[in-house]
Image 1 (tube, rainbow, N blue to C red):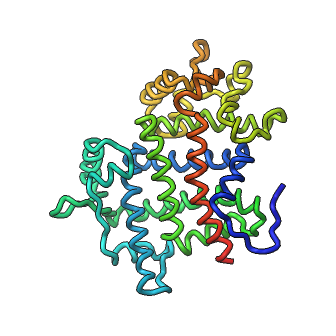
Image 2: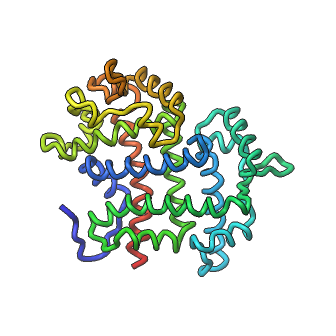
Image 3: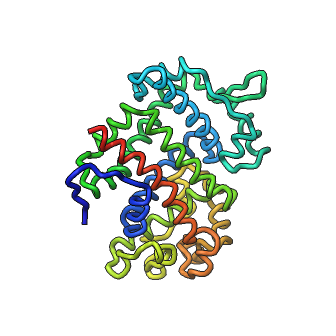
Amino acid sequence: MKLRPSKRIDFSVAMIADLLRSQPTNLMAAFYEMQSSFLIGVYKKYSSIETANIISCFARRTHLEILRQREKNLDHDISFDNFWNNYNTINKPTEKIISLAKLTGLPKETTRRKVVNLIKKNLISANDRKEYYWSIPQKYRDYFSKNINDEIFILSKFVNSFTNYFNIGMNQKKIENEIKSQFSYYWFHFLSGQLKWLKMWQNKIKDIDLLLITLQAVIPTLKYIKKNPEVKNINLSGLYKIVGKTDVQYNFSNASISATSISDISGIPRATCIRKLEKLVKLELLIRDPKSKRYFMNQMIVGRTKNIITKEDISHTIEIFSTYLSITLNALTRSQ
């Protein structure tokens, strides 16, 4: 049942978290679909989610510096349309290898190697003090803008799931327009949540490209749960157990994945997909059918919840994005 407020609600972090815990099969499914689309986009752009995460560190600091211009002028334009003007006029914030490693959870030497590669691609520059800053050549700016525009569409679709639930009265297009009008504000908070979430997984599985593949197996399962009257109303206390419990043992084509399908969706080379899928089998998240050579969620709860889909992982995810959604929903309601 949708909430129909008689006056503007203060969307607290606790309120959003309670909602996600009580209705995970609907709203968490929207979250995982958003994350899948977002991660596919950044993988195709940088050929590595770890590399994209490093860029996000610089982008987040850049948006924060743009926001600080409002300390001097409350009417300062932080819109998507004015982003390149802001980018050209602010003092570029810098990061060091150690701060990037801390923000992403990557080993220091891995971070250094990826930064060197980004410098070679002219996406990061260095000053004399071995501090690094985000540098976007003019020839890449149209491509960058198009990608961000796509990400705004993906994010606004996710946020719209909550504006619909709370009957806020903003459709997806209105949300897109609002995000674009206050772009650096919304994008700073979105990237803050993403960095925390991806660091959680980096610390846990040491290879966040695995996360993109995992999502391709989780999403069909959540869709199954939504359609199954026996489990669709399950709450958070049982979600981590039920994820994976489908009829895949009888119908592999509906809920299984393959190296080819993952490669086609994500852009990850097929040989790499095979290697990473086998790693997920070793982590007991997936099982490989020897006849079809397709992979499906492990039906054995003890194995599957031991490494990746744990109650703690889902709870931490809810904590991180409840904070983001609280900020976003309150800002959207005030904008009307």
